[in-house]
Image (cartoon, rainbow, N blue to C red):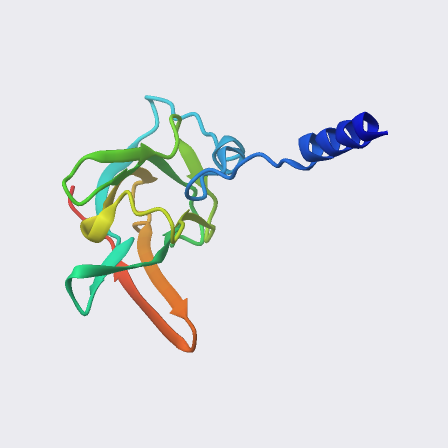
Length: 169
């Protein structure tokens, strides 16, 4: 009887164990369904943008930090043209690459938005984390918009602020 109960308990534990969620929301399906092929013959304009993100901020003093959830909003501002992202790379405070989000170019349809979420518990980026995005757009198309929305709530207190990407090439 004890062996049967133990066996049932072990089987229950085995089947109830869930796969651990990866740190930060990196849904590979999101990128694979957006996979695009860019032909060399396409006359697309190249651009590169920088976006500051804060996965942590200082609170009270330089010795205490507060963790934040960060949402990176990637927006196609054109209502006519599809745009392409060729790189989305996350860097920490010291400029070291933390992760790349996709290996192949992805597309965003007109006025489409996609997001990258940096979980509150993911502090790999630190207080000075940032993203570099590389993109290609049709000639005359409006530039993509990159925004960071950081927030945290504790008890009745809430903190929220935004950053906006800057084109660097």
